[in-house]
Image 1 (cartoon, rainbow, N blue to C red):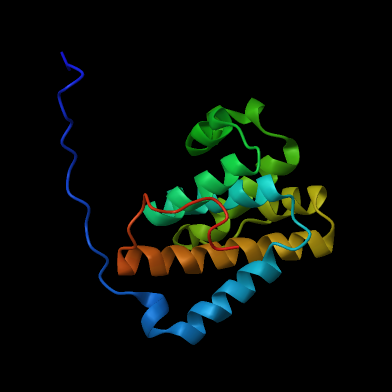
Image 2: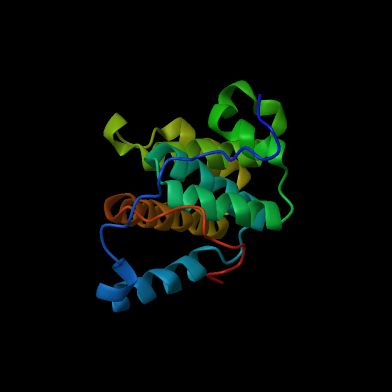
Length: 166
């Protein structure tokens, strides 16, 4: 049993391998601009769900921390965020449009499984106008770039505040 005076000792926090923004500032700023452009016209909660799902698939703890907090701040529910990792068994938590976006996110993120299947793309195309679909594809592409930077440089999760990078 834990007493009120007992402290819990967590594992130590790792250090980042590299301060990417410091050493590649122009690339970092360009990605920020690309990210801002990609989210235009997309529903903010759908946008965050896509970012969370891609970050789950890519095991990017920093991006999971950031986008979970941003999703909660945008009004997303804890329940839907938690169920996102098992969305195929939890479809009733999401709209048809959200499911199409999540499925497209997985197909674009996990390209090692092959090309984006026609049926996945077609389902997304039924729920999104072409301009919105283009924005969605851009948003998925950008979060995958951020995930790769975050995982490679071992960005440290836990310190992000919602809206910090807006």
